[in-house]
Length: 187
Image: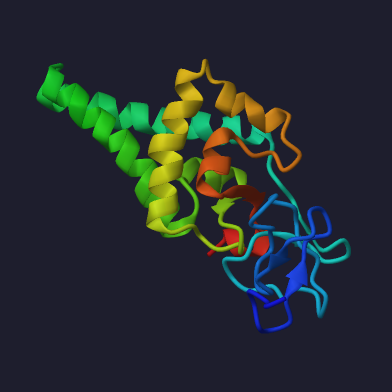
């Protein structure tokens, strides 16, 4: 059988699928992959790792809700300033919707965090633990969150039941929300 990955492939202990040696999560089932060589070394931008257990700390519903609330307050202030300056009209309302979408997409594609996520110390990452690419972010923030919302917010509540604390928008885009290390939060 030919290997997909030539450099010492690793296999998911949950589903058995061969994975890229640099991946932290299985592409097939999303389980955390155990390193067969050495423990991952900390570098700026990496999610928080418990070095003893070598696991990523997934973030659940309530801490995500706190980050959302902080972002909602900040965006409401921006909207009120814009409406105060330009008045209340349909173009201003559409402009506010664009600002809300652009804020999430730009911040997560740039840092993996919105201001609310920075304050509570969480980060959106891809399966390799990196800041997701712009395509994944658009899929997560626009398509995934739209679907999570129109299904009576079930896609957001899914975080409470999912073993990796992922909402529908995370599953759709292949992202995870993890704790960011304290040392890295100050940068």
